[in-house]
Amino acid sequence: MTESGMGRRSFFKGGLTVTAVGALGLGWAGRAAAAAVPTPRIYSTSEWNARPASGAITVENHKPTYIVVHHTVDPGNSSETSLEHAFKISRDIQNFHMDTRGWIDTGQQFTNSRGGHVTEGRHRSLEILRGGKQHVQGANVGNHNSECLGIENEGLYSKEDVPPALWNSLVNLVAYIAHQYGIAPAMIKGHRDFNSTECPGTVLYNRLPELRTAVGKVLGSAVEREEPTWPLLKPGDSGRNVLRAQRLLRAKGADVPADGVFGASTKDGVAAFAAQHGLSRDICAATAATDETGFLGSDVWPLLVPPGGSVSALRADLSA
Image 1 (tube, helix red, strand yellow):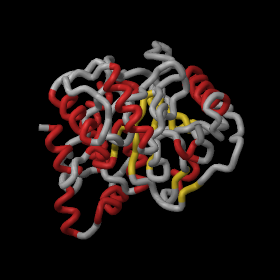
Image 2 (cartoon, one colour):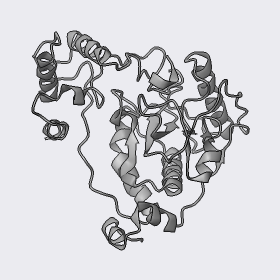
Image 3 (tube, helix red, strand yellow):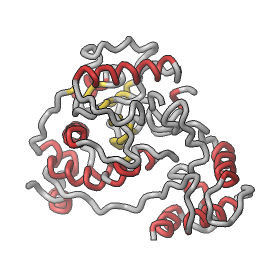
């Protein structure tokens, strides 16, 4: 798959409040610039002995809109926390992305290890981040790579929590990126906010409000009210939202049951509907062996809005 159409980057797999500053006319960029934000230690591609990119690195001539949190899935939740391990993970990711995915370089801009070591992913990401006016285009969020900056967090966080070292380094890294670009904490997202994927794992995804709050504290500002998110449905799920999805799919001509159970036929129906609308079948595959085809999430739901309905109304209904 080409980088332009891909989505998953996997390697195998006390300051002023928002209202007060707004009243002063400073905007978020002014708040972030005014805060004293520590610069994290980020190891460059040369320090972990990265291969040269096989093609030209694209530098977007604008700041990113979103900071996107991912998990790597493989090599799992290792107990190894050394810097050498973090460097090896970075090399393994790059090798998979270049040799198996066929991309020009590592897909994400930065990688965060379970030991709390942060490395540069795609070449030039660190250099351009320090400038604070542009960003390197990665390959980690399908159809949104020109507006997103991605961070891979080593491990699988569908059921287990992140270790403290990884969490602390994630807070520091995200705060620094937000500071450099003037990005509000509300724009810190998970991969599943853009594509139908488990990423960054349910446990880590559910901690994103906590991450936004922690980053807001570093930046010295309050965080805006959380907006409803799209539910992620996958095989084995059941209940009201599955039934709602099945009825909406049937209204769009999909051959699925209306029994409230996300079985094989519903999975196939979602996959066919997604393909019909140009969404990649393996856009969110976490590993070469893991199949997320047929998952129904944030890129599929808006396509199911009934005539006369609205995206916001459907999202609110699903969140009720």
